[in-house]
Length: 409
Image 1: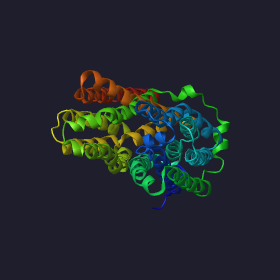
Image 2 (image 1 turned 60 degrees about the vertical axis):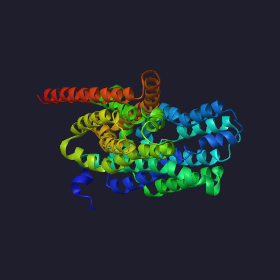
Image 3 (image 1 turned 180 degrees about the horizontal axis):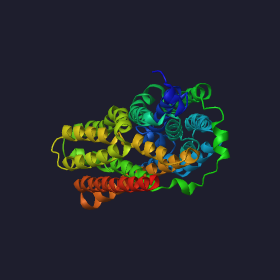
Image 4 (image 1 turned 90 degrees about the vertical axis):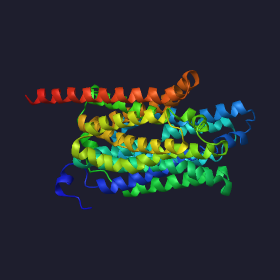
């Protein structure tokens, strides 16, 4: 694809090459972050934990530690990227994650495992950093499509990571798997260092113009923070109950297989739809896609609560993933269009933190409702949240439109 003069005037001349590097780097780093899911309890046991309850506890702590520290530091890295360069933040993230992932293969206690997972989240953030760089360097007319392609790469990493984590350790061992993952991220570090480009003088221009952070918290941005949280709540709320729910639908010997399909089908749906919905957002506006996606995903949760066969749940989760796949690129696109470039990284960092909040709150909410009220209310409750979110976004869009008309007058 040839970059037209119009595109060069609105965005970086390197945006297509940078998009390719960011997709590759995000894909490899997300794989490394998620590949330990299938063998994490086994690794915790190897580190000396023998009680089953303690294994579950430490596994949960080790897995959640990365997302906890990443949520706390995402706005900081976004702000530093605005001041010192977004490429520099990606170099930092890829090198830091390569080191942390390699050290995980050398952990000798469960405390070291949790500490290194915290370190990975603290030093990492490559995917969120890529979202910031692509959102701010791509021509505005192509932002939705480019962010959709990047989201597909991130979702593909989430889909592929557990598959690799289930097949590689039996072949080379758990510790060697971490080292291989660190080596893969180091390749991303090299690609980022030598292939990714920022426009000369872009960092200097951002430093010269001081914009207070409060200027970024417009009604549109606040709506996107809420929407990002809702997206992750909707995606993750079923996670604590999925195996138990599937057990009511299929024979006992097929429960784990079908549960795995249910988990994978939503990610696969998002991979398929993200770039297409991003392109649709470029043509019709991201607000329209956000409202439509929230409504469709919410309505799809109703039949999920009423299924009688495992394949029905797999199919419905796939279509729900198709609907939700358009939200991440559209959220970033709305923020990109509603904040000054000088603080875009900081605001997109807050968006990432909001999504991590949903990633933590979703399983907690689903587990609480499922444990106290039954599993089907989890679907109905999540449906209500998404429909309310669609209504809130419709209201926010109207308010922003009235504000813009007032500004024009």
